[in-house]
Length: 179
Image (cartoon, rainbow, N blue to C red; front, side):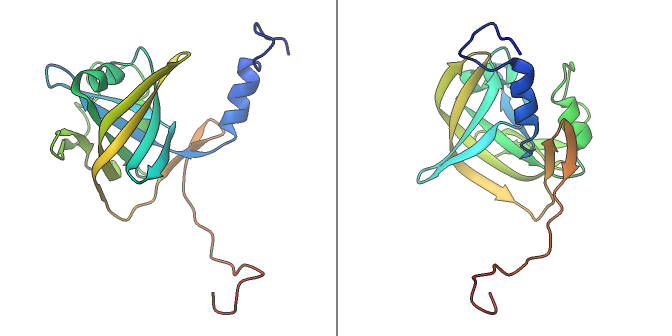
């Protein structure tokens, strides 16, 4: 278990650690300077604060989607439903026109792409801060509008896709009766 930098974990060990932490899957979309849609699969996404509504995502610094976000100043986050595995794979691999085989339309005032059939929720965001950390750029986005429908989210963990399967609610042992 040697590493090139003694102050950092081995890359394979770190990858194994993070693959054991399941997460939802999103496709981040934007429009480039020619108003062409760009998008990338992203599982590095989290809420930062409710006031103001802000989220955080991470994209590879060489991503054309990141370049589009820099150019347009904004993006959309499409939370994928459990039937959208093929879309998640397509947007995570180098494909010439990722949008050719998905149904999408412009969302919100910015018009960033909403993957209508694949996303059960979408948020329009204005990029407020970008910071490069190693091979990726951390993007903070202020949510300016959002829309959601009931849906079952697509998950990724242990290097595979899955779907959310909620368990029946069990009463907490210390909860009052009826709760």
